[in-house]
Length: 298
Image (cartoon, rainbow, N blue to C red; front, top):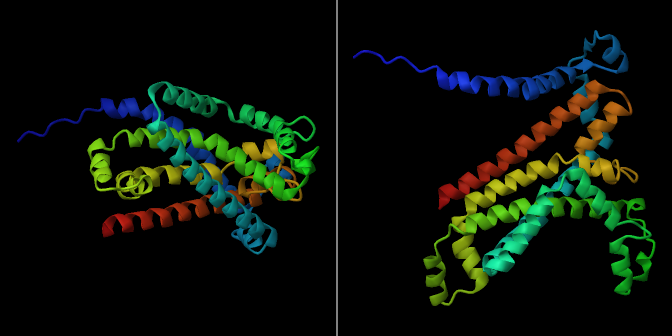
């Protein structure tokens, strides 16, 4: 049989996008990895000629107690945020699914507005809410009888600043997760709910035995995306606290930026970035492996 000639046009059409991604994303990643093996400081940035130092940057990093403190803080920040995001998003999605058409449209419109608000703009609004003198949060807490929040500075106390940033990330993340979960809920057949209700299943039992098993892959996907989103969060933290007070809100992306901009040790900062990507990849691989194992046992 005569071999058919391959059509080159699909590859030609995709080529510009592949080249653009390679230039915009691929080159910086490769350059960062190379830099992590170099003694790259301010002088090398200006004059060039950085020398390779092998694994010295990684050795210095992995033996630094400050780095491991930042790692623990980043993992705690990510875990708290992702748990709150998934719980609240699930509750909001279930609420939207139970509302009437008018209320459903209003709630979804509000979520879309929050989701579409630029990160820095939303962060600025959040700073206004938690302002010490005229902030809505402090005024509300004082009105509820908590007088100790009169003029309370959230940014002057480490735990308070940490909690403030946790709530900020949750607020910005819930709309996407909630709307995605609601879209998944609309695909669950109503006959399954009706049959379960006839058998006397409660609302929680319906979710545990019907909704969650069907939407388990969707829950896994959203959880993975939220882990990535929270783990690499930088703009919100830097705009609000810049890692302070006393490094209470310094996470790995912020720490890498501080090392690069304050100490001008770009090679060490590159090593921090590489370790961050490796840690995030390992976390996701462990999660995916556990998810696939659970799917195989079913």
